[in-house]
Length: 499
Ligand SMILES: C[S@@+](CC[C@H](N)C(=O)[O-])C[C@H]1O[C@@H](n2cnc3c(N)ncnc32)[C@H](O)[C@@H]1O
Image (cartoon, rainbow, N blue to C red):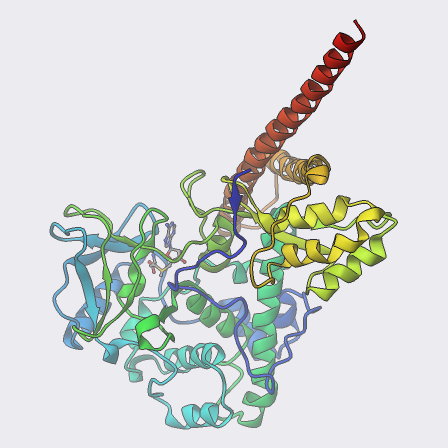
């Protein structure tokens, strides 16, 4: 069996935390809260609703190069050294950085000085607003989200106005999907749950900030500016552009110019602070010809994770880091259901758990979980060791080896895999024929785009499941053929004995 580990070693690039970290004091993150952004906007005041309907009044169309040109001018005037890259329209990612000259493998590029980087320590153009936020010790993510809105609302009086003008007015983000769209298009994918919970985290964060801070200082934080719609925008920007700079104590930062680099799953180059040049750089891991788009890696992310944070799905079969979360559950009618559930809970697991499946195989933890699911009552003494192995919490990785359960455990995984494939196929076949009535052409284009993204994701995820199904079927067939062979040779042996 090919095996992978559950822990994907993520690059630090553009890595959003699983949820924006807010202080316990400020935000409770309601776990059951899964209403849509629209629903939240509907409960806001009339001006906020007007704002919500209009979108944010800053930023540019996602493919705009005009604001990009003034961004380049401002950066040059503010100390960005001469670049070997230019911002252009590109085939992958709409706007991107393109090599102006030959770029060698191993070359350092960018050199963005820290003075041009936005972090939680950046000075607020509106000092009073900044002081209030600091008084409440707001953590980095909500602080930066508020910072962006504050600076954006000041337009030309903010030192970041050229940067903000070049940011997309509506980043490609799942935060902009309505609950109905998420339910309809991501019905087969586990990303649906993650999208719902991310949206509810963002809503919860905004509500906390509003209740605890903004409502206490209405003159500094007018609802026309600080509302659900503007926070959706700022979190969309953070999810798709924030980087963690390991050599700056892991600080999270928006790095103008560097954040025009698009992602390729085929490169391993990532941004970091370079002490010797005192700038944010990345080192290429391949060469580029003049005119070629230069890429970095946003981390070893699955296609679902890329859709969740960055709003795109790589072409089918091009993402070597692709995986799909595979959900397995205890059988409620199992006579040892209670004992198995207790063993799982003792090791921090639940009745249903997800494990990442990859084209290369599945993790040992999934196999351990499957052993537990299929193990008979006489193995009750071993439930705990199986649960430990499934949780991957043991100090050394315990061997999960129960040859007597192999066949049943693999059959269990195969059954789950096949029912998952059915769900994807049902969605993909249903999506083909569904004609929808759109209110206008903008809405029609949006629907087409979302459907295409969902379709690409489902095809990528189903591909992984098909591959696992193939491996599982072969292993089971070989195992059963081996069993039959053994039985046959035993039978022949006995026959010879009685001859
Ligand atoms: C850090 S920004 C990169 C600059 C961005 N293209 C722009 O014009 O502002 C990340 C966004 O770029 C786009 N992007 C990056 N890599 C991509 C890729 N491989 N395919 C499609 N879109 C990509 C996505 O919209 C993503 O949210």
